[in-house]
Length: 521
Image 1 (cartoon, rainbow, N blue to C red):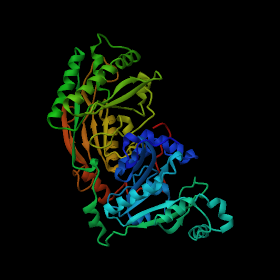
Image 2 (cartoon, one colour):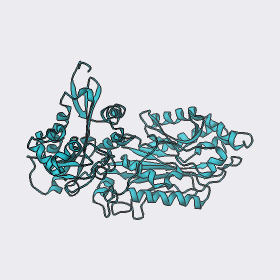
Image 3 (cartoon, helix red, strand yellow):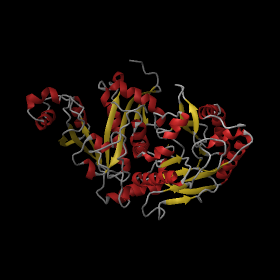
Image 4 (cartoon, rainbow, N blue to C red):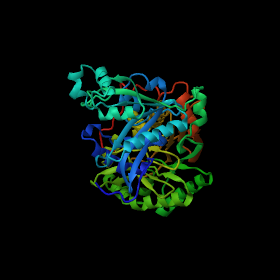
């Protein structure tokens, strides 16, 4: 074990800690199936940063603790870990829940003599007192159960023997010493936990400072929303007109104009259409074969990313730069959206599902990663055109905490447009989030596959009382070059998710189904 030079601190986790947390979790679990996958930890922090903690020694993260807020109706009845945590994403967090629910405490094996678990429990209790909640609930493992079940005869007898100190169980003993009471046990809590035979001990700590008053009013007074739940976000969608340009400087001048306009309107985000940069193919003296044209466009990638980064910094606006053909490290062509943030950061999101035309004419391959993008206005997601027609993708992003989804698209006629439009509206309703769409209009002769366009860019909302009557916050005139704006109230969206007419996300059956990402993320 390394000697500690400075001090051990417990602090709230941040998405910048992800690499260290994931590495530490992997070291801590002997069974890799119990470790977190991909974006789960980022999602847990995004949903309730106030309840996620890390232990840090000399800059090294040696422990992680995850908590969410939930109603007694859900956490006091029988449930599974998957059901109560939204499959490990923490997406079941309820900002008005009257209990904290602990679903992870993980400590680096080399640092388990520093009472880090005890420190995490203390932080949870402090948070519970601060929020004036009823208490803390969780379901604890019983790692010696399989070894002793024949001796004691039943799970109930095992718990009784541990309480009477006839059997030693380090996990259960620790929780009892911390003032938690046994309120029962649950079967199939984590089926893969073979040592506990899938069972878990259902436990509760009651907040001694809780005053038995109307819990809803108490929550309203004390709940402090995270930064991405406060106020409004102003977004703009550019319905961009395709026409022949004489130079790349002419293209840059038009894009700069739109970014400048959106900045003058004090927008936080501006969205451009899918593959709108293919306008640069009009610079060629004659029509290029498909495979040569797409290779030619990929050569512009470094110049264009620097250009959009410069605009984001200069005009203090987050730019979703439509999409552009990019050759990846494997030599394959992807359709990639560059998200250029106003702090100078650049993120990429590849199109997961290329259309048949993209695959046939341009040999575009599908991307393999899908992540929420952290911005100064909270996490966002980007799905390029056809990807919006696959509901699993948007649900996976919502599990990661997004509240705004950006959909750059490219359609040549109304039927194709309607597929993207109707599916995007469905994504807004079923996920209770905002969806921003941007497409191109106009004509581009001598550029194959994008010579004609049809678009009606729009900004969509859920369909409930706090939002626009028809679920449309703003909408462009079809096939006319223009910019549409809308102020999106994030706090209203959060309120609707918790108290709206139907509350779709809260009513998901995590015990029956889930969205699981099988690839790298």
